[in-house]
Length: 162
Image (tube, rainbow, N blue to C red; front, side):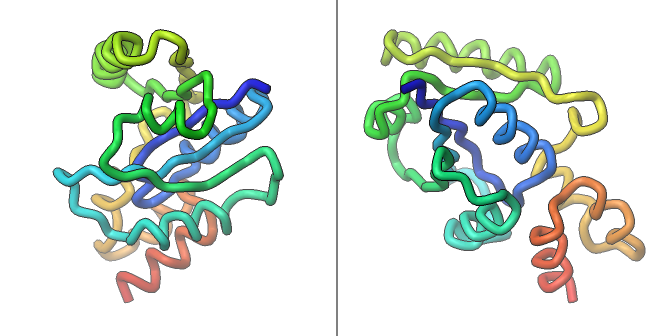
């Protein structure tokens, strides 16, 4: 069974994240969406809220697991869940450079785990959770943000801003 881990902060989940998850399910027999915590980041939503937002935004699928991991290297977590692959998205040249370096470091730590890269389509390529958070709040933000996030995320964002 080909198992992959797709890790991120998902704060909040975007349509770009959903695209990656959908493609991951096409490519792998099992996909673990792993919410990581980065002590250098300030989060809008708790890990539990982010897990709930992902569950509410995705159709139920027995091949999909939504989990969280903390204070571990991603390759160690991948081994823990018996994943042979790490799934990563590349939106820009900056992402490419970062992911290229991380792929090599991950290989040094776990040569048996393969990193697989996907590039999202143009209409969602620039999407990031940080961009969504930056667009949220000013007058008329709803009409802009609505096209970039799933409905459950939009509802939660509206609750937070209200």
